[in-house]
Image (cartoon, one colour):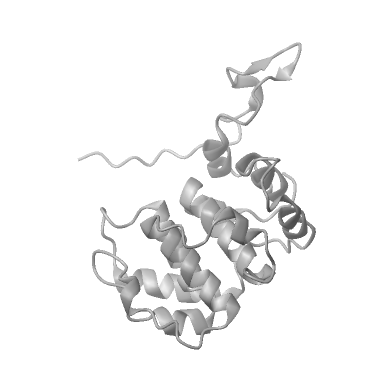
Length: 200
């Protein structure tokens, strides 16, 4: 059995080494081809992450600018959010087929605050997440949006669409922030949560 322990370093992901980089024009790619590797190396800031991950013509682009303006150096809700997710990971234990970036994105959402976590406490099983066990009756707009987004990410149900994300009355800013961060975790993995700078 071989365990891969290789981690990218800033030197490994220098833009001058990229195939899309020319001496005359610099980077010629419309989007970074190696963003996941650069995130792992710790050379991507929050601003670049949002710009590269979501199209400039997306319907919720104006809300992304708000996220950038209010970025406080962490993608976590607070320290309790970190502890809840770590605790749930320890309780669930490692399961190779289940533990994908998509699973971690949902875990990030369902442990984001105490109300959502309390409602979702019974949904975690050894091999999957059972959304039928989540209590949504009487949930706030924030809690309902977060739970619906978690289900959309995990099951691909489309309960929360890009158009929904553009409407503050449907998805409040606090929920929007968490959903965007969860989408980034689903796409790039847990290394996204290590980003602490607005610009790298």
